[in-house]
Length: 146
Image (spheres, rainbow, N blue to C red):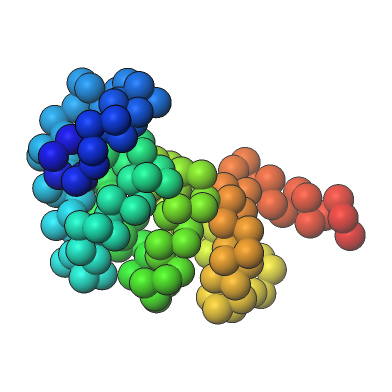
């Protein structure tokens, strides 16, 4: 995995952890993902590699799918630090369906009157919260707690 600048042991570790990496066109995926993160956030390769080390599945993903998630992050004005944090700590935002981030923002702003900044603060402290929108789960939980 030349594009990641890992030593041989690290490369084997990730290939064993995520065997799907073996069947992917890593050269194309790494190139595309690096390009999109540089284009939209000016993240250099070392920053993308740090994301890979936290979420090695990233290079199994189609770069165009990553682009859709990047556009959502830009839409909600995530800064560089917030972007890195949610990607590294959410447990798989980039592997989720596109629209996951928009869905949580839409639900919390329209049904629960949160501002975008409040939602980003929640996601900073609880990045896995981004997945709580499935099947109206969040609204059902709010109703139960009331």
